[in-house]
Length: 179
Length: 407
Image 1: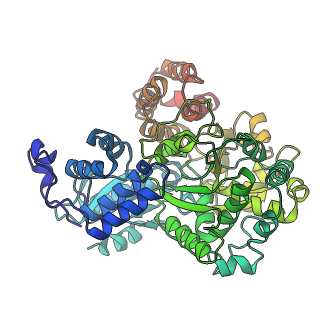
Image 2: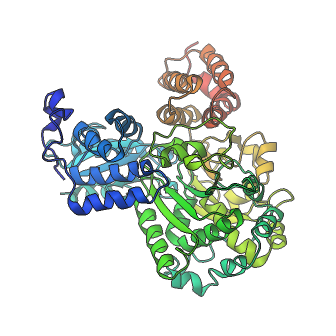
Image 3: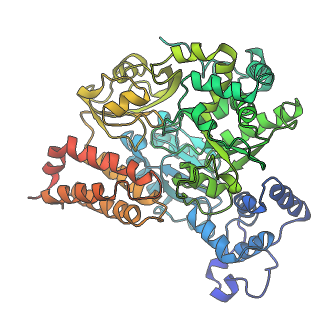
């Protein structure tokens, strides 16, 4: 999704949400109930921090500083503690991402199966480097560590799906399917 | 050929459903275990010689027996489904194709350790396994298997190899960055949320129902003197038939490669094998006549780890392979301990420089010196795992590195 368009270009104070909860960063009542349900699953509600951050990213598109502060409020945590968590893990985006994410594995088994060529092919097709998003906001490209599908190397994760046994032709078909 | 225990249901279209699992005798182990004394369950697992299949190979029943006997508060069971060791993919198959085997293993284990709440920590990238396992948990609740004295919370990680280290996993489960914790106290004494906790791998727990159903002697007899059972070997790299293969832990590495995975592809001539996931020391082509149990690999100077076997033929560049793994360790070091944080980054740069043709021969000794100095100085086993490849790749294939160096 295209949540919080342009936020990465806003001034730091605005990004930090110093004016209080931004109007576009708010869960629905159903989501708020889900936050409480998740918190109730753990002996300490903080255990739900990762799941709630997943929810937040699905909802707002990425984890901005406003989102960190919003989520921190549910856990009585300092936003700095949430920031520490967000920056530790690879699956939380700290800037807007494309509508789709293509993550090409570059670890050993995929490397042995030609992942370098696959990655180069994706870069050419999309016209972006690793870590970049296409100008139309369609695809963010990543190069990632072992996704544990080495029996079908080279492979990539495309959004929620594992795409296996990649060839340039298969990559083309997959990319064409991303709108 | 060994009996197929863990993958027995994989051929069924409905293997991921409760009906499919029950049709092949599923939950029979739980029916039996629920009438057993908790201590008797642990005894049976001890006698089976089941050893942890996630990496460390610790005897499972012994681990369970470390839970304090008279602990008044809760005890937790945490399943490590944060599969991430390069070259390993077996737990993905179990989560997708036989999720009820894990649920049944958890039910039995929970009874043994007197636990009412279990967590399954699934790596964040495993979306499909997470969905399928969550659906199985829901089925188990609907059928009344869960929710009567034992509950399961399915927890998604968010992308960090270090969370496969058990105390890093616990930190992450508690909603923190996945920094490992100093041991002791071990998780069995003070684990998740400060309570006694058993952390077991997916495949390890999937072994528990058949042990209870068919008996410890049967399971022990499948393996070697010091390790019972079969296990799932993930085989990838330069083989004609990459895939997950179940075999006795007594199978030799040669047999695994040639009889199960179809031999060596590429040039057809074997150069080296990673026997137990990226962190295992590499073996040369003439070091593959060894049993693939915990002790067999230890005696060979490597480790079975997660049993991820990566095969390299003569055309593979060992320096490039090390560069790829060194990049991985540099990326995944959690940054908590100085020797690991600094060495992994520095060694990656050095190996990269050598591969690019700008290295010097004496760089190799410097890398080895730096690698060895950090061993045993860190909170967790991550760095000790990293130096397995650093040292073995350079020492066993030194001439290949030197050929890339200038002087």
